[in-house]
View 1 (cartoon, protein in one colour):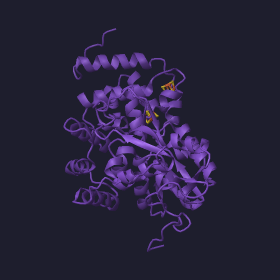
View 2 (view 1 turned 60 degrees about the horizontal axis):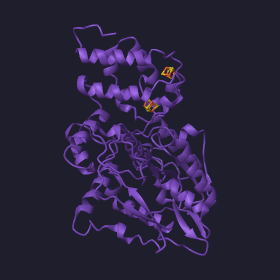
View 3 (view 1 turned 45 degrees about the vertical axis):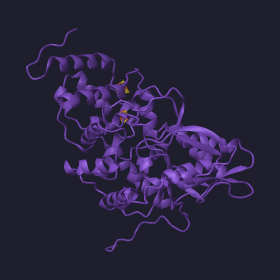
View 4 (view 1 turned 30 degrees about the vertical axis):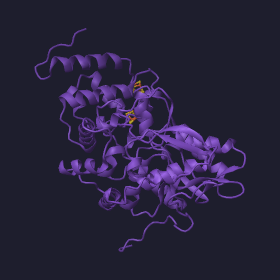
Length: 410
Ligand code: SF4
Ligand code: SF4
Protein backbone atom coordinates (compact mmCIF):
# COMPACT_ATOMS: atom_id res chain seq x y z
CA UNK A 1 0.00 0.00 0.00
CA UNK A 2 1.43 3.39 -0.97
CA UNK A 3 2.17 5.79 1.89
CA UNK A 4 -0.35 8.63 2.19
CA UNK A 5 1.15 12.02 1.27
CA UNK A 6 1.93 14.32 4.14
CA UNK A 7 2.89 17.98 3.84
CA UNK A 8 5.72 17.78 6.40
CA UNK A 9 7.65 14.73 5.16
CA UNK A 10 9.06 13.82 1.74
CA UNK A 11 7.33 10.96 -0.04
CA UNK A 12 10.47 8.81 0.03
CA UNK A 13 10.62 9.08 3.83
CA UNK A 14 6.93 8.22 4.18
CA UNK A 15 7.40 5.16 2.03
CA UNK A 16 10.42 4.01 4.04
CA UNK A 17 8.40 4.35 7.25
CA UNK A 18 5.45 2.49 5.72
CA UNK A 19 7.83 -0.41 4.93
CA UNK A 20 9.21 -0.38 8.49
CA UNK A 21 5.67 -0.31 9.90
CA UNK A 22 4.74 -3.34 7.84
CA UNK A 23 7.86 -5.19 9.02
CA UNK A 24 7.11 -4.39 12.67
CA UNK A 25 3.35 -4.96 12.48
CA UNK A 26 3.59 -8.33 14.26
CA UNK A 27 5.32 -6.82 17.31
CA UNK A 28 3.23 -7.51 20.39
CA UNK A 29 5.26 -5.19 22.64
CA UNK A 30 6.61 -7.93 24.88
CA UNK A 31 9.70 -5.84 25.70
CA UNK A 32 12.16 -8.73 25.44
CA UNK A 33 14.27 -6.67 23.03
CA UNK A 34 14.65 -3.84 25.53
CA UNK A 35 15.37 -6.12 28.47
CA UNK A 36 18.09 -7.89 26.42
CA UNK A 37 19.71 -4.70 25.15
CA UNK A 38 23.22 -4.22 26.64
CA UNK A 39 22.74 -0.48 26.18
CA UNK A 40 19.27 -0.63 27.73
CA UNK A 41 20.13 1.33 30.84
CA UNK A 42 21.54 4.15 28.74
CA UNK A 43 18.65 4.47 26.28
CA UNK A 44 15.81 6.91 26.78
CA UNK A 45 13.19 4.90 24.89
CA UNK A 46 14.79 1.53 24.04
CA UNK A 47 13.99 -0.70 21.05
CA UNK A 48 10.45 -1.70 22.15
CA UNK A 49 9.30 1.91 22.36
CA UNK A 50 11.02 2.82 19.08
CA UNK A 51 9.04 0.03 17.41
CA UNK A 52 5.84 1.29 19.06
CA UNK A 53 6.51 4.79 17.70
CA UNK A 54 7.02 3.35 14.21
CA UNK A 55 3.68 1.55 14.47
CA UNK A 56 2.03 4.79 15.68
CA UNK A 57 3.46 6.68 12.68
CA UNK A 58 5.40 9.07 14.93
CA UNK A 59 8.12 9.83 12.39
CA UNK A 60 9.44 12.98 14.08
CA UNK A 61 9.68 11.31 17.50
CA UNK A 62 11.60 8.39 16.00
CA UNK A 63 13.97 10.53 13.95
CA UNK A 64 14.50 12.83 16.93
CA UNK A 65 15.57 10.10 19.35
CA UNK A 66 19.31 9.87 19.98
CA UNK A 67 18.68 6.25 20.98
CA UNK A 68 19.20 5.60 17.26
CA UNK A 69 22.86 6.61 17.67
CA UNK A 70 23.43 5.12 21.10
CA UNK A 71 22.43 1.70 19.76
CA UNK A 72 25.70 -0.10 19.00
CA UNK A 73 24.16 -2.49 16.47
CA UNK A 74 25.08 -5.47 18.64
CA UNK A 75 22.09 -7.50 17.42
CA UNK A 76 20.95 -8.79 20.84
CA UNK A 77 17.40 -7.49 20.24
CA UNK A 78 17.14 -9.31 16.91
CA UNK A 79 18.43 -12.52 18.47
CA UNK A 80 15.73 -12.60 21.16
CA UNK A 81 12.67 -11.32 19.29
CA UNK A 82 10.13 -14.15 19.28
CA UNK A 83 8.37 -12.61 16.29
CA UNK A 84 11.58 -12.73 14.23
CA UNK A 85 11.65 -8.99 13.72
CA UNK A 86 15.14 -7.80 12.79
CA UNK A 87 15.03 -5.01 15.37
CA UNK A 88 18.74 -4.18 14.98
CA UNK A 89 18.24 -3.99 11.20
CA UNK A 90 15.26 -1.65 11.72
CA UNK A 91 17.45 0.61 13.87
CA UNK A 92 20.20 0.55 11.25
CA UNK A 93 17.72 1.65 8.56
CA UNK A 94 16.43 4.38 10.88
CA UNK A 95 20.00 5.66 11.26
CA UNK A 96 20.28 5.85 7.48
CA UNK A 97 16.99 7.78 7.30
CA UNK A 98 18.09 10.07 10.13
CA UNK A 99 21.31 10.83 8.22
CA UNK A 100 19.24 12.00 5.28
CA UNK A 101 16.22 13.63 6.92
CA UNK A 102 17.00 14.16 10.60
CA UNK A 103 19.05 16.64 12.56
CA UNK A 104 19.92 14.96 15.84
CA UNK A 105 22.88 16.52 17.61
CA UNK A 106 24.67 14.03 19.85
CA UNK A 107 28.23 12.72 20.27
CA UNK A 108 27.60 9.38 18.56
CA UNK A 109 25.88 10.97 15.54
CA UNK A 110 28.70 13.49 15.15
CA UNK A 111 31.33 10.74 15.58
CA UNK A 112 29.71 8.72 12.81
CA UNK A 113 29.63 11.76 10.54
CA UNK A 114 33.28 12.64 11.26
CA UNK A 115 34.37 9.01 10.76
CA UNK A 116 32.48 8.78 7.47
CA UNK A 117 34.11 11.99 6.22
CA UNK A 118 37.57 10.69 7.16
CA UNK A 119 37.02 7.31 5.51
CA UNK A 120 35.97 8.99 2.29
CA UNK A 121 39.50 10.45 2.15
CA UNK A 122 41.72 7.79 3.76
CA UNK A 123 41.68 4.08 4.50
CA UNK A 124 41.71 4.13 8.29
CA UNK A 125 40.39 6.28 11.13
CA UNK A 126 43.23 8.41 12.50
CA UNK A 127 42.47 8.87 16.22
CA UNK A 128 44.33 12.19 16.47
CA UNK A 129 42.48 13.75 13.54
CA UNK A 130 39.22 12.20 14.73
CA UNK A 131 39.62 13.69 18.25
CA UNK A 132 40.55 17.13 16.86
CA UNK A 133 37.52 17.10 14.53
CA UNK A 134 35.21 16.21 17.44
CA UNK A 135 36.63 19.02 19.60
CA UNK A 136 36.18 21.50 16.75
CA UNK A 137 32.49 20.49 16.70
CA UNK A 138 32.10 21.09 20.43
CA UNK A 139 32.61 17.52 21.73
CA UNK A 140 35.34 17.60 24.34
CA UNK A 141 36.24 14.26 26.00
CA UNK A 142 34.90 14.03 29.54
CA UNK A 143 38.05 12.22 30.70
CA UNK A 144 40.48 15.00 29.86
CA UNK A 145 43.41 13.30 31.64
CA UNK A 146 42.92 10.08 29.65
CA UNK A 147 42.37 11.94 26.37
CA UNK A 148 45.48 14.07 26.91
CA UNK A 149 47.52 10.94 27.72
CA UNK A 150 46.38 9.23 24.56
CA UNK A 151 47.04 12.34 22.48
CA UNK A 152 50.57 12.69 23.88
CA UNK A 153 51.23 9.02 23.20
CA UNK A 154 50.05 9.34 19.59
CA UNK A 155 52.17 12.44 18.99
CA UNK A 156 55.26 10.80 20.53
CA UNK A 157 54.80 7.82 18.23
CA UNK A 158 54.85 10.17 15.26
CA UNK A 159 58.14 11.81 16.28
CA UNK A 160 61.45 10.56 14.80
CA UNK A 161 62.35 7.29 16.55
CA UNK A 162 58.80 6.85 17.85
CA UNK A 163 57.68 5.25 14.62
CA UNK A 164 59.74 2.11 15.09
CA UNK A 165 57.73 -0.91 13.99
CA UNK A 166 57.83 -2.79 17.27
CA UNK A 167 55.95 -5.74 15.85
CA UNK A 168 59.26 -6.75 14.27
CA UNK A 169 60.42 -7.60 17.80
CA UNK A 170 57.98 -10.50 17.98
CA UNK A 171 60.06 -13.54 17.14
CA UNK A 172 57.93 -16.62 16.62
CA UNK A 173 59.68 -19.98 16.58
CA UNK A 174 60.70 -21.43 13.21
CA UNK A 175 57.87 -23.95 13.36
CA UNK A 176 55.25 -21.29 14.19
CA UNK A 177 51.95 -21.47 12.35
CA UNK A 178 51.01 -18.39 10.33
CA UNK A 179 47.57 -16.85 10.67
CA UNK A 180 46.17 -14.03 8.49
CA UNK A 181 45.55 -11.07 10.81
CA UNK A 182 43.38 -7.99 10.41
CA UNK A 183 44.32 -5.37 13.04
CA UNK A 184 41.67 -2.70 12.33
CA UNK A 185 42.11 1.05 12.92
CA UNK A 186 42.79 1.48 16.64
CA UNK A 187 45.30 -1.25 17.52
CA UNK A 188 48.06 -0.16 15.07
CA UNK A 189 47.86 3.34 16.58
CA UNK A 190 48.87 2.00 20.00
CA UNK A 191 52.27 0.67 19.03
CA UNK A 192 53.11 -0.91 22.39
CA UNK A 193 49.86 -2.80 22.51
CA UNK A 194 50.13 -3.69 18.85
CA UNK A 195 53.55 -5.16 19.54
CA UNK A 196 52.19 -6.97 22.60
CA UNK A 197 49.55 -8.73 20.49
CA UNK A 198 52.25 -9.95 18.07
CA UNK A 199 54.49 -10.95 20.96
CA UNK A 200 51.79 -12.86 22.82
CA UNK A 201 50.84 -14.64 19.59
CA UNK A 202 54.52 -15.52 19.07
CA UNK A 203 54.54 -17.01 22.56
CA UNK A 204 51.69 -19.27 21.46
CA UNK A 205 53.74 -20.35 18.43
CA UNK A 206 51.75 -18.14 16.05
CA UNK A 207 53.10 -15.69 13.49
CA UNK A 208 50.56 -13.03 12.54
CA UNK A 209 50.59 -12.23 8.85
CA UNK A 210 49.13 -8.75 9.09
CA UNK A 211 47.40 -7.05 6.22
CA UNK A 212 49.15 -3.71 6.83
CA UNK A 213 47.40 -1.81 4.04
CA UNK A 214 43.94 -3.04 5.09
CA UNK A 215 41.36 -0.31 5.40
CA UNK A 216 38.63 0.22 7.98
CA UNK A 217 36.25 -2.69 8.63
CA UNK A 218 33.30 -0.38 7.97
CA UNK A 219 31.54 -1.09 11.24
CA UNK A 220 28.11 0.61 11.17
CA UNK A 221 28.82 2.70 14.27
CA UNK A 222 31.73 4.26 12.38
CA UNK A 223 29.53 5.73 9.70
CA UNK A 224 28.09 4.85 6.35
CA UNK A 225 31.24 3.60 4.60
CA UNK A 226 31.38 -0.07 3.64
CA UNK A 227 34.40 -2.22 4.55
CA UNK A 228 37.55 -1.04 2.77
CA UNK A 229 39.19 -4.41 3.38
CA UNK A 230 38.48 -7.27 1.01
CA UNK A 231 39.44 -10.94 1.21
CA UNK A 232 37.94 -14.35 0.49
CA UNK A 233 39.98 -15.93 3.28
CA UNK A 234 39.11 -16.27 6.94
CA UNK A 235 40.98 -13.65 9.01
CA UNK A 236 41.86 -13.37 12.70
CA UNK A 237 41.05 -10.14 14.52
CA UNK A 238 41.66 -8.38 17.82
CA UNK A 239 38.55 -6.16 17.85
CA UNK A 240 34.88 -7.21 18.24
CA UNK A 241 33.69 -4.17 16.26
CA UNK A 242 35.91 -5.34 13.38
CA UNK A 243 34.26 -8.79 13.55
CA UNK A 244 30.84 -7.14 13.22
CA UNK A 245 31.95 -4.78 10.44
CA UNK A 246 33.69 -7.50 8.43
CA UNK A 247 30.66 -9.79 8.79
CA UNK A 248 28.51 -7.02 7.21
CA UNK A 249 30.76 -7.30 4.15
CA UNK A 250 30.64 -11.09 4.10
CA UNK A 251 34.19 -11.54 5.46
CA UNK A 252 34.57 -14.42 7.90
CA UNK A 253 36.64 -13.63 10.98
CA UNK A 254 37.66 -15.32 14.23
CA UNK A 255 38.76 -13.45 17.37
CA UNK A 256 42.48 -14.08 17.76
CA UNK A 257 42.06 -14.46 21.50
CA UNK A 258 39.61 -17.38 21.10
CA UNK A 259 42.03 -19.08 18.69
CA UNK A 260 45.04 -18.66 21.00
CA UNK A 261 43.16 -19.98 24.06
CA UNK A 262 42.05 -23.03 22.12
CA UNK A 263 45.62 -23.53 20.85
CA UNK A 264 47.07 -23.37 24.38
CA UNK A 265 44.57 -26.02 25.54
CA UNK A 266 45.66 -28.55 22.92
CA UNK A 267 49.41 -27.83 22.77
CA UNK A 268 51.51 -30.20 24.89
CA UNK A 269 54.29 -28.42 26.80
CA UNK A 270 52.48 -25.08 26.68
CA UNK A 271 50.46 -23.42 29.38
CA UNK A 272 48.74 -20.12 29.90
CA UNK A 273 49.98 -17.79 32.63
CA UNK A 274 48.11 -14.86 34.15
CA UNK A 275 49.61 -11.69 35.62
CA UNK A 276 47.44 -12.04 38.73
CA UNK A 277 45.53 -14.65 40.70
CA UNK A 278 42.09 -13.20 39.86
CA UNK A 279 40.32 -10.95 37.40
CA UNK A 280 36.89 -9.65 36.47
CA UNK A 281 36.01 -10.40 32.81
CA UNK A 282 34.40 -7.83 30.53
CA UNK A 283 33.48 -8.63 26.95
CA UNK A 284 31.35 -5.59 26.08
CA UNK A 285 28.25 -5.66 23.93
CA UNK A 286 29.53 -6.01 20.37
CA UNK A 287 31.51 -9.21 20.91
CA UNK A 288 30.02 -12.66 20.50
CA UNK A 289 29.28 -12.40 24.22
CA UNK A 290 28.86 -16.04 25.27
CA UNK A 291 31.88 -17.17 23.22
CA UNK A 292 34.11 -14.36 24.50
CA UNK A 293 33.13 -15.00 28.13
CA UNK A 294 33.71 -18.73 27.63
CA UNK A 295 37.19 -18.02 26.19
CA UNK A 296 38.10 -15.90 29.21
CA UNK A 297 36.70 -18.64 31.47
CA UNK A 298 38.83 -21.22 29.70
CA UNK A 299 41.89 -18.96 30.09
CA UNK A 300 41.14 -18.66 33.82
CA UNK A 301 40.91 -22.44 34.10
CA UNK A 302 44.19 -22.98 32.25
CA UNK A 303 46.09 -20.31 34.20
CA UNK A 304 44.59 -21.18 37.61
CA UNK A 305 43.31 -17.62 37.97
CA UNK A 306 39.91 -17.00 39.51
CA UNK A 307 37.42 -15.36 37.16
CA UNK A 308 35.09 -13.28 39.30
CA UNK A 309 31.64 -13.06 37.76
CA UNK A 310 28.34 -11.74 38.88
CA UNK A 311 25.26 -12.17 36.67
CA UNK A 312 26.42 -12.35 33.01
CA UNK A 313 24.93 -9.05 31.86
CA UNK A 314 27.31 -7.20 34.19
CA UNK A 315 30.13 -8.38 31.93
CA UNK A 316 28.50 -7.53 28.61
CA UNK A 317 26.76 -4.20 29.21
CA UNK A 318 27.69 -1.29 26.96
CA UNK A 319 30.80 0.72 27.96
CA UNK A 320 29.47 3.70 26.03
CA UNK A 321 31.06 2.69 22.72
CA UNK A 322 32.02 5.71 20.57
CA UNK A 323 30.06 8.05 22.84
CA UNK A 324 31.72 6.78 26.03
CA UNK A 325 34.58 9.24 25.99
CA UNK A 326 32.17 12.17 25.66
CA UNK A 327 29.34 11.05 27.95
CA UNK A 328 31.46 9.37 30.64
CA UNK A 329 30.78 6.17 32.59
CA UNK A 330 27.60 4.30 31.71
CA UNK A 331 25.40 2.75 34.39
CA UNK A 332 26.71 -0.63 33.21
CA UNK A 333 30.37 0.31 33.33
CA UNK A 334 29.96 1.99 36.74
CA UNK A 335 28.43 -1.19 38.20
CA UNK A 336 31.18 -3.32 36.71
CA UNK A 337 33.94 -1.10 38.07
CA UNK A 338 32.39 -1.03 41.53
CA UNK A 339 32.12 -4.83 41.46
CA UNK A 340 35.82 -5.10 40.50
CA UNK A 341 36.82 -2.60 43.21
CA UNK A 342 34.95 -4.60 45.86
CA UNK A 343 36.64 -7.81 44.69
CA UNK A 344 40.05 -6.08 44.48
CA UNK A 345 40.58 -7.51 41.04
CA UNK A 346 41.64 -6.01 37.68
CA UNK A 347 39.20 -6.00 34.79
CA UNK A 348 40.35 -7.97 31.74
CA UNK A 349 38.57 -7.29 28.47
CA UNK A 350 38.67 -8.56 24.90
CA UNK A 351 37.95 -5.13 23.33
CA UNK A 352 40.32 -2.16 23.03
CA UNK A 353 37.54 0.45 22.93
CA UNK A 354 36.03 -1.13 26.07
CA UNK A 355 39.44 -0.99 27.76
CA UNK A 356 39.84 2.73 27.12
CA UNK A 357 36.25 3.58 28.09
CA UNK A 358 36.52 1.54 31.31
CA UNK A 359 39.82 3.24 32.19
CA UNK A 360 38.04 6.58 31.83
CA UNK A 361 35.16 5.27 33.95
CA UNK A 362 37.63 4.25 36.69
CA UNK A 363 39.11 7.77 36.70
CA UNK A 364 35.68 9.38 36.77
CA UNK A 365 34.52 7.16 39.64
CA UNK A 366 37.86 7.52 41.39
CA UNK A 367 38.30 3.76 41.60
CA UNK A 368 41.79 2.38 41.44
CA UNK A 369 40.91 -0.57 39.20
CA UNK A 370 43.43 -1.63 36.51
CA UNK A 371 41.73 -2.33 33.19
CA UNK A 372 43.66 -4.52 30.76
CA UNK A 373 43.28 -5.89 27.28
CA UNK A 374 43.84 -9.67 27.27
CA UNK A 375 47.50 -9.59 26.03
CA UNK A 376 48.31 -7.32 28.98
CA UNK A 377 47.18 -10.02 31.41
CA UNK A 378 47.71 -13.41 29.79
CA UNK A 379 50.69 -14.93 28.03
CA UNK A 380 51.82 -18.32 26.91
CA UNK A 381 54.60 -20.19 28.67
CA UNK A 382 56.26 -23.53 28.22
CA UNK A 383 55.86 -25.86 31.16
CA UNK A 384 59.66 -25.70 31.55
CA UNK A 385 59.94 -21.89 31.43
CA UNK A 386 58.72 -18.86 29.53
CA UNK A 387 58.59 -19.55 25.81
CA UNK A 388 57.39 -16.16 24.64
CA UNK A 389 58.65 -12.65 25.24
CA UNK A 390 57.08 -10.88 28.20
CA UNK A 391 53.92 -8.92 27.63
CA UNK A 392 54.03 -5.14 27.64
CA UNK A 393 52.74 -3.39 30.70
CA UNK A 394 51.42 -6.46 32.47
CA UNK A 395 50.48 -5.36 35.97
CA UNK A 396 50.63 -7.42 39.09
CA UNK A 397 47.20 -7.32 40.58
CA UNK A 398 48.60 -8.02 44.04
CA UNK A 399 50.96 -5.05 43.82
CA UNK A 400 48.29 -2.76 42.45
CA UNK A 401 45.33 -3.28 44.77
CA UNK A 402 41.99 -2.22 43.37
CA UNK A 403 40.69 -0.08 46.14
CA UNK A 404 38.58 3.02 46.10
CA UNK A 405 40.85 5.99 45.84
CA UNK A 406 40.70 8.18 48.90
CA UNK A 407 39.18 11.57 48.22
CA UNK A 408 40.62 14.56 50.00
CA UNK A 409 37.25 15.21 51.57
CA UNK A 410 36.57 11.60 52.67
S1 SF4 B 1 11.09 -8.48 21.21
FE1 SF4 B 1 10.08 -8.33 19.18
S2 SF4 B 1 7.89 -8.60 19.64
FE2 SF4 B 1 8.90 -8.12 21.60
S3 SF4 B 1 8.71 -5.87 21.81
FE3 SF4 B 1 10.70 -6.29 20.84
S4 SF4 B 1 10.25 -6.16 18.61
FE4 SF4 B 1 8.28 -6.40 19.65
S1 SF4 C 1 21.21 -3.63 18.36
FE1 SF4 C 1 21.99 -3.96 20.48
S2 SF4 C 1 22.28 -1.86 21.28
FE2 SF4 C 1 20.93 -1.69 19.47
S3 SF4 C 1 18.84 -1.75 20.32
FE3 SF4 C 1 19.40 -3.84 19.70
S4 SF4 C 1 20.18 -4.79 21.60
FE4 SF4 C 1 20.19 -2.54 21.90
